[in-house]
Length: 320
Image (cartoon, rainbow, N blue to C red; front, top):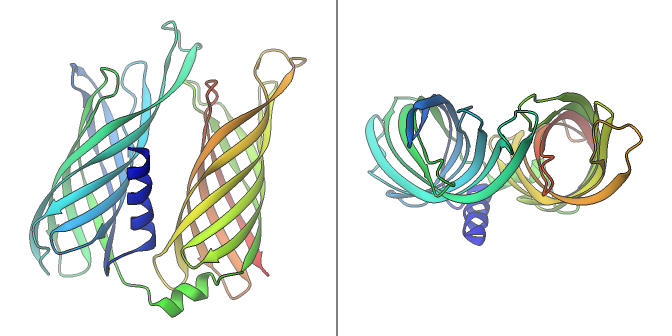
């Protein structure tokens, strides 16, 4: 299932067909075993049409805050849909793997939180009304399953936009093989707990362009100080790129993150240890001119010791 998800994300990022859509949906979620346990739901998606009837999508789904759970995840779906008209209705159904991140409790106390991860399935049906322009209105019903008795159903509505095809010469304007970049970044880190402790974060990133659709990076990242604990580390990631316009690029990154962390966040003298975590990132880069780039990145730190965090970084870099 992991390799299947990677293949779908790679295909979506590199672009194998001429039509791509980006969408933002929001609505309501309920837990299937307890219909009274409900919350909000948000879905950010990228869809790549492969044939007139087949598409692939990469989705970020936030399942809201049901009782004693804060859960979101990354999914990839294969879609079968009716032919897309210039204006009017189309309908589709999709299914695929879903990797979730769940903040829950160990003994029922909010202070004793846990960060659980796992694989499930994401299935969806949708109805889309296509407008004269590239915009469309979408209603989607999604269902997550296989998630430790916490299956959920989401009903969402929102807008989407069909992205234009970016010519190869414009792709090369954004990144040529051999281009190197250095970024100075700053932002906010948020601990994945029920209190969502926050701190100021910083990063220095080096990027090397393998081809217009692939990059490799190393980043030194300081997640800031939360209480008496401060985590700092170095990560290496492989990035998949998809140009949206002649100046804007969407980025998906996956890699490893070596950190120096203090596990006891109540004792300033507690011993610091070195750990290895996972890192998954979604970013957007803007080409200011031939030399300068602006970048916004969301990083999800994935730990095996219940210390997940979100790190949002914004900054500028130079190409050399």
